[in-house]
Length: 243
Ligand SMILES: CC(C)(COP(=O)(O)OP(=O)(O)OC[C@H]1O[C@@H](n2cnc3c(N)ncnc32)[C@H](O)[C@@H]1OP(=O)(O)O)[C@@H](O)C(=O)NCCC(=O)NCCS
Image (cartoon, rainbow, N blue to C red; front, side, top):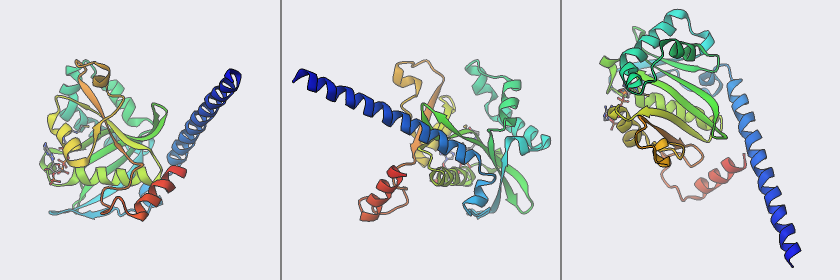
């Protein structure tokens, strides 16, 4: 009897290891696939021009290596203006490090312009990557210039990233936010449905940590679907799980 139980236990362990290794390699191949997409907006036929309440914006997609020096410098200046103090408060500011991050080939951007007259009003730097063994869309930076804040630009950009994340079958969207940036924390948690990620340092008792890690599940049915218990919703979940 005992030996039969041991055989079953061993088999369960082997099955679990195989499942884990399958999901790891699946995560890796989905990230590779997503990173191979030249222009996600075009690939998924998303509108580049979007009407907000008060004005129209256009979106342009770039990889870090495609961004001109001028555009990269603009992004860097916005990051420095908005968040340098946050980074410094955590002893994490490095201009050289930030510049290298911005020009990395793994970096992806959506640049937002007010249309017309094509003034730059914001940008997001995001990546398709593996985080804690999961394939995720990681938001590295999201910035809207001061005079355009509160007009719906940030929310629209995150909604577009969510669509990209779902199309590329990423498991979740993630980001790191400084706790002292309370406005941004509220924006993500209260307006965009993010919550503390299981990997956030607070959950391991590190209450002194200056930042938290937030995430939003992309495997569940999109929130704009009215009836989450409908047959279609359930089929969607099964489909996403199997794929
Ligand atoms: C945080 C930030 C990206 C938000 O973008 P935004 O374009 O100003 O936000 P939106 O106008 O799209 O706001 C969307 C919703 O969030 C709310 N919101 C925006 N900023 C908010 C704030 N500071 N506090 C509370 N709610 C806020 C808006 O009222 C709006 O609510 P509604 O949908 O009910 O109307 C932008 O303010 C910013 O660039 N801040 C400085 C840089 C920064 O902190 N970036 C985040 C670090 S990763």
